[in-house]
Picture (cartoon, rainbow, N blue to C red):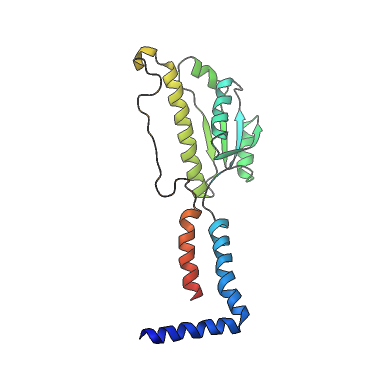
Amino acid sequence: MRMHRVARLVMKEFLQLRRDPLALRLTLVAPILQLVLLGYAATLDVRNIPTVVCDLDRAAASRDMIRAVMESGYFQEAGRVDRMTDVIHYLDGGRAVVGLVFPPDYAERLDSGGRAQLQAMVDGANSSEATTAIGHLSGIVMNRSIQLAVRRLPAEAFAGRIGPPVDAEMRVRYNESQRSSHFLIPGVVGLIMLVST
């Protein structure tokens, strides 16, 4: 096909768009609307996971852990209960995805230098959300555990340096905010162009 034929075809299409205003609107508005709706409304980001808390200890240590979990931005408190069976009712009723249970001796075990256990129940109906919740919760608990372990060590162990011996600096390249719309939109643009043509 020669270039003058392509140029004639392009001119013919522009003339047709000028004659038919509806086609012009469909050609311009529909792809932009689809891009906005599919790119930003359909998101894979998991934030504000509904979380129910059962704090049977009600001590400063359990409150610190709850604060660390809720301030992370990944979890949102859906309620507080006084019995473990109520946590299960929240999960079964779909009012929460994560249930945190602190035993009555949580702070006592930490203060005595022992190991305290925290129970986390996760609704696995949505496996993507459950896996993300477990990952974020594990990271938060591990970070708090390291901070507590560092406080227990004598100052001589750090040779004048306060803090853990290894400090990892994580950097995400090309999508630093880790928003799913940043990688969905280019795919949606390709899909819209394919469907439109």
